[in-house]
Length: 434
Image (cartoon, rainbow, N blue to C red; front, side, top):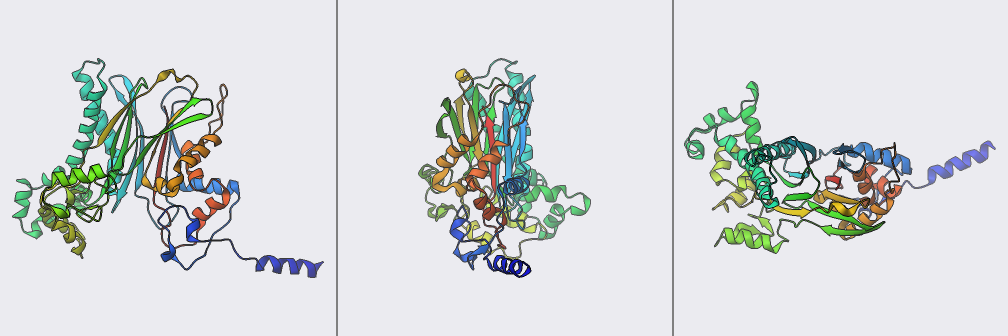
């Protein structure tokens, strides 16, 4: 028996480890250049995979009404421990004039996480403040949806304007004054880390940017407004009969693949052949609408005189100069969101309806199969029967599970791949019941 046991152990040790090839990893980030392939991964059980995915994505929920129906679920996911996610989400109730609005959002940052973190925190605040002003002006009377859309847009534009203006206020006389200052004086003004760093933090926000998709629902749950900047996506799925669903993409991407956006930018910058190069703004950045990204919205002197003096400074400014020499009539990136209004039918009774907000990391892992991923997710969700004391699983986590393959082996590859660079884009998802 001892000999037989030893032989079995040797056979088990001789079995090859679980391995994955790059084309088995969802999305477009991972490729043959990340080899050698195949790469090892740890094959988890279904319960292990679910628990590990939950731990990695930290799903959260917000109840914004009575009963289980009114709920938003969200998560932020990046499986590579060596990379800090630059995605964020927001879920908040906005108390305005004694009534409660609901705001949910996803933000996809780039170049760094300072601006996206700033946006996720402050955009809900400034939207609430603008709604409060509107409510006071109308004395609590009903406000038509188009006016709310305008105020919603104005709030987001005001948030973006403040990013650059808060820095220009540090220089009496604005940019013109900064241009005439010596570098050392600018450097001293900006790099105040030893006395709190408020000026440094303001200026740092100009260095980075974020796309944004913000959803606003009125207190009566009869209207939805979506404000979109960039390439996040909003999808509405509605139950038209029990277990029969309609599917509608509510947003358009704002990048070089959108002919309307390309035409808009070229129309705003006539005669500038390099305002778009290789489907990128000034040849440098993919989204045509964003928050932040001040070097694309201010004259090049703003970057050269102010941002170049931020500690520790830009040791190699060649990449910046490649697009700054094309910056002639800013702004090139717009902070004007595309705001769309959707009436919500309250007569649906027990039929379900969900709004899905996601960063482009989720659309990337789904590829051409996003509709079937969402269909599988909808079929996997239990149908509520009467009053239940148990809280159903986080819907955003369930959706991510399906997007990553829907079974333990696929999830194991995504969570435990032995690779020393990120193999997935950052993913943020919000699922809101309407």
